[in-house]
Image (tube, rainbow, N blue to C red; front, side, top):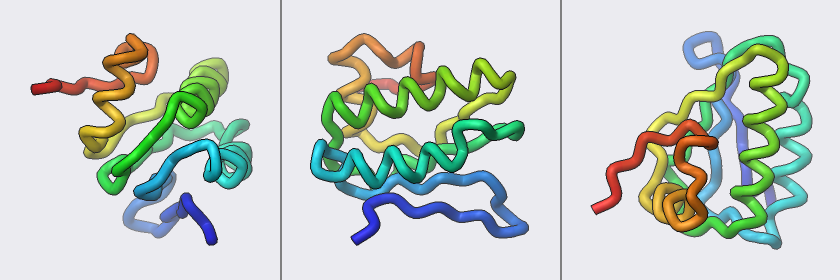
Length: 105
């Protein structure tokens, strides 16, 4: 079962849709998918709206992916990061490094 899917239509190129569960059991699939985009020369968008659970392993992988794209002079934008992403990023102190703008209530 794929835990991460991508949308690459003419209307929304370069959008990576994150699945609801992003835990250590899903990290291999996440890594494989992100690896396909690691050498990208275009800006990408992470759609985190469906994420219900995420652990530090997945956050570390996302951070490494974002840093790789920054090294390629590309940007990663977030589309509707879920509360779960924002909460974990805040606890880990990674909001800025991940490029998140979360207002945690």
